[in-house]
Amino acid sequence: MKIIFMGTPDFARDSLEAVYNAGYEIIGVVTNPDRPKGRGMKMIPSPVKEFALEKELKIYQPEKVKNNIEFIDEIKSLNPDVICVVAYGKILPEEILNIPKLGCINVHGSLLPKYRGAAPIQWAILNGDKETGVTTMYMDKGMDTGNMILKEKITIGEDETTGELWDRLSKIGGELLVKTLEQIEDRTAPREKQGEDYTMAPMLNKDMAKIDWENKSAIEVKNLVRGLNPIMGAYTFWNGKKIKFWKVDIAKENEIMVDNLETLKNGTVVVSNPKDGLYIKTKKGIIKVLEIQGENAKRMPIGDFLRGNNISEFEIFE
Image (cartoon, rainbow, N blue to C red; front, side, top):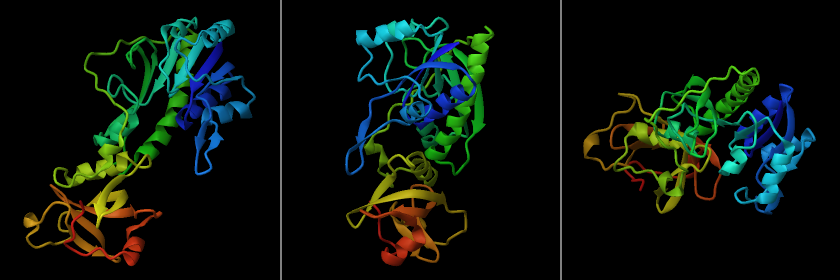
């Protein structure tokens, strides 16, 4: 079975590696063009391209695919049986979707029809979900609307971050893609229509990273911190300086005693010292900061931060 693989980040790389190790004939790898990165703005290849180079696979890096007649004709000439698409980063036109004999197959990081869109893994954490998974599906012209093939469900850890969940689902996605290809090849792959009860997972934006002390509970602040780790980090302001929180927990009942807690403004520091840590009042409950990053500084444990920064009790984070 001849396969074209389309993908870009490390999430896709794991799927490409799984397909390669399963012995399938990969006749082409399509990934995004190299992008400048870092202080030197050096051109960096995608993780998918790095793997393809290592295995000496044919690589294509079109700037666009829609109305790219030369690229579409090239894909047609390869005559693939299946095109596998995993976090490619571009919407495929129908001209490409209709090329492979056995269909275009997508690996999606949620239990569809929940969380269609660009950021399903992040939103599962942000919303405090207890479980998620991976779905493989036949692609159509809609946004993650195609008939489903296989699913695998997992439990989300209560402290698990987007980065940690991403890594787990990445491995599962590769394994599930291979199972899907096996069933497609022997003509036993199911086609389950998605229900109408769907939700969307739009791209994240920097505005949502600011902690809203006034309106968010401790569990909501914790989920925000988990959901934005390691992408951008949830942030707040202390003495006019931008501070990022990378790991927090919820203070247990009676873990600390604060007089007249209900009279304090949300965002107020109720405990602050290197030994006990940093505790902050929210709309409902108290969070305990475990890992923090000061402005123009590195991430560090809260105890180390407090040894060099004097945050006083009853100061207010904005």
